[in-house]
Image (cartoon, rainbow, N blue to C red):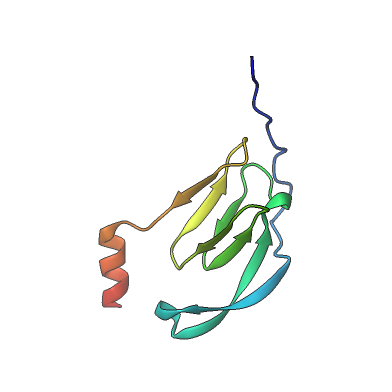
Length: 92
């Protein structure tokens, strides 16, 4: 029988390991955004976009109004804006 490994809960606020300039059209071009080390993010942590999350095997880019929550197994649960929210943001 195989059992999953749970990661420890996040203690305190997740701190970025640095910042990087990324081209984000909605923000008018090159934008300095935080970069997070996925190996240091605990369960229950929320990362708000725009942000970059770096893991050993992948890199995720969260755009405006997107967020990621880490579950106890280290999965990223992405929250994306609804079509209604996207239309309202475009009208602003």
